[in-house]
Image (cartoon, rainbow, N blue to C red; front, side, top):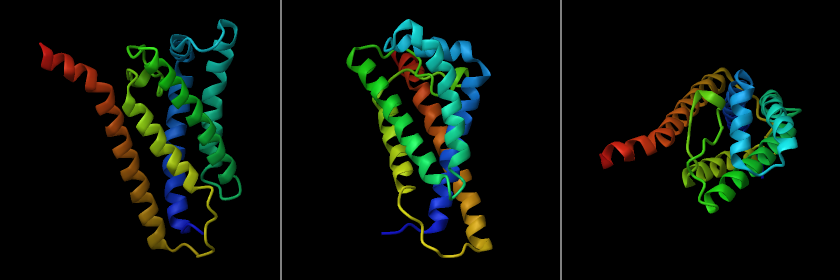
Length: 179
């Protein structure tokens, strides 16, 4: 089984945009992100800061590896590992009833309380990353492929950002409806 190279490029650019933005926003204010990590209450205090400072670097590393065909599988595996950690942390805290904390997904730029939609979102992203582990066929890309890849990656990024804003605003909308 092989994946079309245009589909592989599109998915890799989309994931690179997501993980590049996520890593950059966390680096923008590491202290706020450190607070988000601490709020999960999953690590010993002594590991919270090193984890918070390392995670954005790993996200940026995956974003750099994904667009390049030679490093794409490594980037995809790193994304899958990160998503496993993120999803487990969210699921554990939801199971504990600790949903009122910020997920920290995009640092201080977008506050989102923990909920099941974050798990669904992460599973969809993991599916995208898993697609990149399938070898791409040797078909040469054309200018039309480049236009399709660029437009598709932009559309996916806009849909992803819109979904995140909707997830983030859901608690506020519920509070407005209740009042």
